[in-house]
Amino acid sequence: MDLDNSNKELITELNKREDYWNNTIKSISTRLTCPANEVIQLQSDALSQKQRISDEIKYMSYELLKFKPLIKKTRKVKTEFYLTKYPLKLQGKDKLYMIENDLSLYDQRLDIYDVHIDFLRESLGNLETISYAIKNKISLYQLTDLE
Image (tube, rainbow, N blue to C red):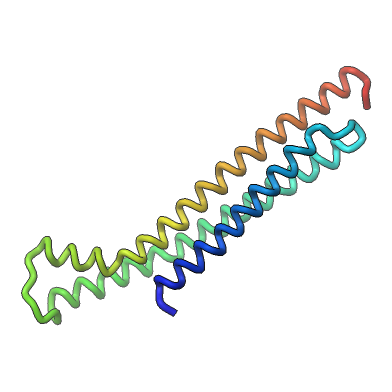
């Protein structure tokens, strides 16, 4: 499979993951109005989701790190090709342009990973905000004896 199709499939898969996280955060946030006897379960669910999203950030970061050496290796191969085997004589900027063009799909893959990791970090921030809201709700219940 070529890298272009692989990138398209990755985007599709990550869009599904983003939909999952958006729905999960929406579900947890709508449960903030739950009665006092359900708030501990809500807190547990939010904590569990925070751990899952942290694990996904870690996984995606490792995928990104695994991909970077491949780009460097490919850059070396392409540079050698344009310096020694390319049938036309190229000037410095032309060689760089050709190499960058050949690596554009690799750069796209890096950008895809970066965008998804940023999304996950923002989602983690949303879950942390929800967790603070839950903690405050528990404190209010304890202060007002509504347990």
